[in-house]
Each structure stands twice: as C-alpha cells, then as structure tokens.
Amino acid sequence: MIYFWAFVIGGLICALVELIYIHFPRLTPGHLLVGLTVTGAVLNGFGWYDALIKFAGAGALIPVSGFGASITRGVLQETQKLGWEGLFTGTLEFVGLGIAAGVLFATLAALVSVPKG
Amino acid sequence: MAVQRLGQYTVQLSRPPRITAAFTLMGPREGAGPLGSYFDGIVDDYMWGETSAEKAERKYLEQAARRALQAAGLTEHDVDCFIAGDLLNQIVSSTFSARSLGIPYLGVFAACATSALALGLAAMLVDGGFARRVLVATASHYQAVERQYRYPIELNIQRGATNQYTATGGAAAVVAPPEEGAGPRITRITFGRVVDWGVTNANDMGSAMAPAACDTLMRHFQDTNTTPGDYDLILTGDLAKVGSKVFRALVDRAGVTLGGKHMDGGASMYTPEQWSGAGASGSVCSMAVILGYVYKEMARGRFRRVLVLPTGCLHSPTTWQQGDSCPGISHALVLEND
Amino acid sequence: MDRDQTAIQGAKDYQRLVQQLTPKPNAALLAARAFVVGGTICLVGQFVFDWFRFRQPTEGEAIAATLACMILFGVVLTALGVYDDLGQLGGMGAAVPITGFANAMTSAAMDFRREGFVLGMAAKMFIIAGPVIVFGILAGTLTGLVAWLAGGR
Image 1: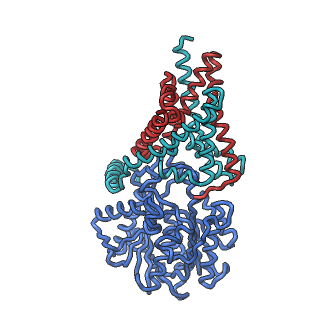
Image 2 (image 1 turned 90 degrees about the vertical axis):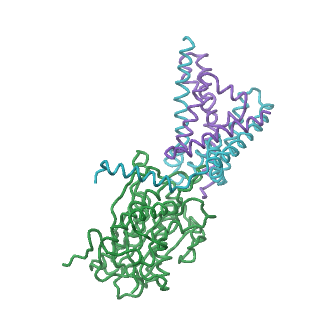
Image 3 (image 1 turned 45 degrees about the vertical axis):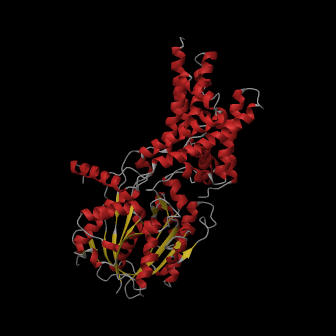
C-alpha cells in the first residue's frame, strides 16, 4: 500500500507544481522549487510534513518539499537538545548529506561527461 | 550630394550593389530540416571538433566567411570591410573571427535581425563608394546561446509551444558593386525602430518581435509606395509560428493583405518532428534563409523581387530578470534581380 | 517616445491579442505527464528506501542512504544526457524530486566546467540548486525559531 501512496502523493505534488508553472509563465522552475521547499519547511514547523512522510513514504520524502521539511526537522531537534545554538547547527543535520553527495557526484560527472543536447 | 532617401525611413541605393557570393554552413539539425538542401555545407558535428560551444560558433562564422570569399574568387585583401554580428556577449564570435581574417572590422548587434543590419550597412558602404567590397557574416550556436540566455543544456526544462530553438551555423556573403558578377541586388533598405509592446515573457520572443516587424513593414510600404503585390515573397525572420500568426493579425489590422506572400524563416527551419516548439531563432537563422533559400530561388528565377524582414529580440537575461519587457527590432531589405 | 497612457493601453490590447493567438498548453495532459513521471521517481525512491530499511540500523540512516542513492540516479541520468529529455516529457515531474535537484547541480557543473574548475564548475554549480538551499535554510531556521519560542523558552 505504501507503494501506491508513494506514487500518488509524489505524482500529485509534481502535477500541482506543473499546473502552477503553466499558469504563471513569469515564474521559472527556480521560483517554483524555492516555493515548494519553503512550503515543506514551514509545514513541518507543526510536524505536518513528517506526518505526510509517514503516510506516503518516498512520495513525500523525494520531492524538494521533503528537503525543506528535513531542514526544519533538524532545527527543531537540535533546538530541543542545545537551545538557541540549534537554530544554526540543526539546519544541515539531515540535508547536509544530500548537498555533499550532490557536490561529489556532480563533480565526477563534470569530469567524465560533456553536455549533449 | 543627392539625398538617397525615400520618405522618412527608407534608403534608396543609386547603384544597387549585389550579393555576389554567399555561403551557408549549418549544423546537423538544420541540415536535416526542410531547407537543408538549400544550404551550401552541413557539418555533422555540432561542436565541429571544438572543446566549447563558443569556439564552435566562432568556427562556423569564420569558415562561412572564408568560404564565401572563396566562392566569390576573392581573398581577404580584396574586401575593404568585414561586418559581422552574433548573439554572444560582446559579440565575441564575430570579433575573434575578425582577428584571424585581418580585415577592417565593424561589429554589429541586432540579435536575430543582425543579418539585415549587416547586409544593409554593407550595401550602403559599397553604394556610397566607401568600400569596394564588403564581407558580411553572422553565426549562432544552440549550446552557446542557450547557456548564455537561458539554462544549462542538460537541465530538466520543459519547453512549450512558444519556445524557439536557436539554430546552429554560420552564413556569410560578399556585397560588391553591380558590375561584379551576378546575384540579387540590394535596392532599398528600411532600418527599423526599436518597438516594445510590453511582452515580458522571454519564452515568447515571436510575440515580442511581431510589432517591430509590422512597424517596419508599414513604414517601408508607406515610404516606397508599394504593396505586398509588388513583391514575390515577404520573408520575416525568426518570428516562428506563434509570432507569425500575431504578425499577420497586426498587418491585417493595419489594413494590408499579405495573401500567400508571407513566409517566416524561423517557422521553416525545422519539421514538426524535429522540434515541437514555435520554430528556430538565432542570428544565423534569417541569414541562412536569405542566403540559402531566397538567394538560390532568386538565381533560379522563381522570385524576382523579395522583401526580407529579419526580426530581433533585444532583451538580455539581466534586463529580463529585472522585470523589463522585451524590445524588438526589424530591418527590411529589398532584394531584386535585374 | 515615452511610454505614455496610449502606449500602456496599446500594450494591454496587444497582450490580449497575443493571448488569443498563442496556442493554449494542454494543462490536463501536462499535469498528467508530470504526475506519472514524478510518481514513478517517487515509487523508485520507495523501493530504494525499503531496500535500505532492512540494511541500515535506524530509519534516519535509511532515509539518508535513499536520498544519496536517488541523487546518484539523477547525476548518472544527467551525465548520460537523458535527464533533459525526462524534463521535456515530465516537466515539474522531473524537476521537483531530489533527482531534479541533482540534475540542476550536475547540468550546471558540466556546462560551466569549460570556464575552469574554480570559476566555472564550482562557482556555477549552485546557480539553480543554490536558491533552494538558501530559502530552505531561511524558512527552516525561521520556522524552527518560532516553534522554539512558542515551545516556551
């Protein structure tokens, strides 16, 4: 069942953003991705997005809203442990890995591949 | 000295110079398109063995220029002036080609309307006696232009029906006095005004340029006292499918009937299977259609008198990001057989 | 000529004309394509997640491994030159998942490598992915601050 919801919720998030993209030609994909990330981050202030991840698994985790939610989750956890320092140490707690992996793999790709098109 | 002008905007050349030689050198995608058989050379490799798109664009421009000289039976020393333009910042492809050609160089920019600007200036220089012969060239390259104006090549961007695809290639011509050989003559030139009707969508350049094309066309008709019936073909450049539709609607509103005379270079460059967007753009696009399709069909006698109307979209990524709309420009040339 | 009132009125008229003549994108079809492509990527992510869940000590580590794995997929597809086609097919369905984030970094890195590793590849790697990180951190920190203050500290 989790596979069904992963597909449906993940697909719905993408379809929704696609509709916004079609409707507002002035918005670039960059604007939309930022908007979705911020949405995920804010929703997780109430723990709502983590609830969605429980429900839909990768369907909520894989979209960039999951990236934003992970930042908030890290901040909340660290502030509970450390107090105000957590506002700074918590940000990259769960997403640092994604950024580091991205930098590493992207560098390797740039070494071995050239744009086609 | 007699004023060689008609009306307010149009230049009337007294001894109209000819395009005595032309060479179009296009990329594989353009070569496989509907106009492929009109191009003089097709390069199978986009990058043409170069390590960057910018170097490749430069090579397209320089090679087209050299082969146009060859086709005219001339060397670099026989031309007095090299007029060229492209889409890259600081028109580097033209500049770097001029560096190796060693001909006195005038760099010009009118985005995709550079073709008509360069040819028009060349004709005026030759007619005025300021140059015996002029070499003219433009080029563009999909990857180089895409990454300057838009996004990295491999980014997951979805392009819609109004998007245009930058054509890859270089095209060049020799403009010389009428007694030197055959070829169509450039008889009248109408340089256009910059027209901006507030299109802010940089993915819809056709609609941004259509008002400029209409403006220049109407001024040309008014100055020269001609109608579409006086021309065998009216060729706009790079308006592509959507822009052409808008252009025809604007011309219609102005009370002029184009009939079946109108053709657009950008809309004719690719088959629908090759590119599902609006069509082609890029400073080589209109130049290649003029020097490939129009030039050859005029030599065959299919067209006697053609009005070419290349259009350019003059925005930069910076002005667009700062919220400015996209200004358009269009320059008109009349090409005539004897 | 200054953009006086008639010019502004003309611009508005023109927008209407352009809107009439521009082909309307088929929103339902495009959204359906985004749904299928995005959904499929998430489904693959779920399989990867389940695979790691039995091999990693905690759920948090399984999530981390899944994300790294999906990023690798995105990078490989970009290097092979197929992720831009996936973008043309699925639109936001290809851009929104973390694979699209990886694609944004990789495509920029590949493109700008010719301007050198320092000023090209490294400097431009985050031209598209950067704003997501910046705004993600801003929103996450502010949300965390509000939640922390509301939590009575």
